Image 1 (cartoon, rainbow, N blue to C red):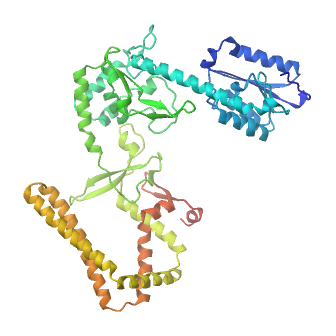
Image 2 (cartoon, helix red, strand yellow):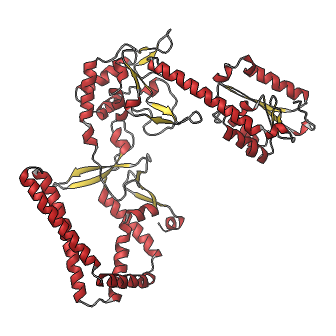
Image 3 (cartoon, rainbow, N blue to C red):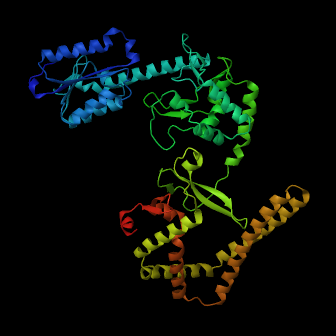
Length: 525
């Protein structure tokens, strides 16, 4: 189709050019030079002013986060460009959903005329070529999907053969200087790897090893490989216990090629999902080992033996809400014995805990109970201004009357009696299990005490119900007590705290900062 522009001086054209590695297989006609030549010839023939040429060389059409493309969009937003010209529709993109978004919505909303030369598409005129554009976009998407399947199949085959197909080899190895898909020992980094395994063999924990390396200023694998930092933070450039643990369990160091530990969600997304160990592709004896098998197995047993020490967790009211004010990371909670031998929980900065010797952040140590009480006091102070006891009184009175009527029928009494009976039978059975040796003494004591305490609570409740039946109920007094109990206890509800509070921050000076979810409450704090 021969395209003509009737009013060329009204436009500022953008020449968009894209070439991916897959497109190179289609022949020289897809080259950057060929595309540019075709576009330049068209604008010269139609005397179109060109604002700029935008070239994305080596970028897939399924990815719209391309540097030149984003720059072109920015120029469109700034009203510097009102016409986009490509060689064909696939140069704009191969994802039919996003391609359709730009064709059908974005370009028209920004008054941008789009022209695809070889497809005969011109959004500035009515034509049948424009009508079948969605079908062209779908075909381009199917082509990208087919190419993705073929590439994935080839890569999987290379993995099964033990050929390295990653971008960077694991720390301690480098690419073979002459042979493709092979790795060899990196003599500069290898001593550090051997030393890490040696320290682990001497009984040092992963955290201790990371602290030693950080103290000595040894570059991390990312820093050594000169990889860009995606997101800078307090951990940037520091060894971590997780990194050390991963290295100590990596079979690559005993000469086995380990690949396929994560897979992309789809050919349209960069996100990857971690795979279970049984789905990894492991090929033995593909390269020279850095660590012998015996040392690797001993270190593996030492690492696994410590895993149970990290499994204990603690429940506390501010869980998931408390953060370090300085570094922004969630605060950890640790258990310490006081002078009387009682367990006491303390908040501590996780960054400081992991990188103490590196001098990153500060301790922030403070009793969990102290922080929680301060937060609850502040929440109670602010929220009580919004609660009117007189308004709650009629509601509570109705609730008391309903409860009295329900108690008269005896349903709760019958339920309590049945539950007490079940717990008594359960206690008898536990005692028999203890005598027969099916239940150990520590387990018996723990379960027995818990069941006995639960039965005691139910018996107290049953006793209270029986006394209520004997005495007349003063509905007004009961309602007033109910209102007061709500005002006293409502603020200790975790559900309420999560609904009201966005986050609580603890500063290095032990100052507590509460950030509420509602601006009205923020103004009162």
